[in-house]
Every structure is written in C-alpha cells, then in structure tokens.
Image (cartoon, rainbow, N blue to C red; front, side, top):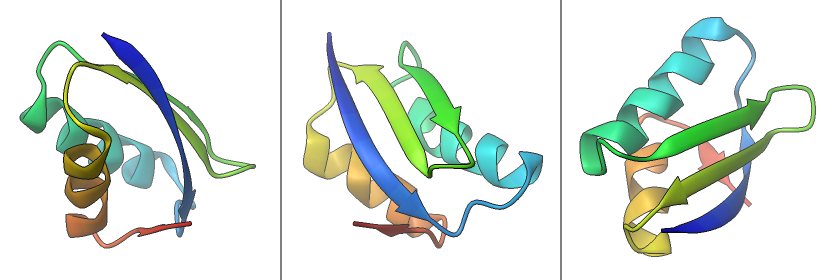
Length: 65
C-alpha cells in the first residue's frame, strides 16, 4: 500500500469529504483517506493505481489539480 496525495478542488463540507472517501473506498475498500478540506489536500493510502483513484474522485464531480 502506498500513499498518494491529491489536490482536490470543490470540497466545501462534510458531505463532500464523505463523497470523496466513499468513492475511493468503493474502488479499494481497504484504503484510508485523510482530507484537509481547508487546503484541498487528500491523502489516500491504497494499493489502487493513482489514475484509478483520481478517476473515482473526479466521477464524484471534483477537480483534481
């Protein structure tokens, strides 16, 4: 398992955090997600490829920079 960091734009509330976390965990149920909403930083510890994690987050409607 490796940790990948994303800059995610558009997260403004607890619902947003849950949506991102659930999107990642649907892809990898064992993943751990730490979100700093103020900075938009999302740290994901997962064995899934970075591209797949980014796609899962983007499908929820958030921009990754």
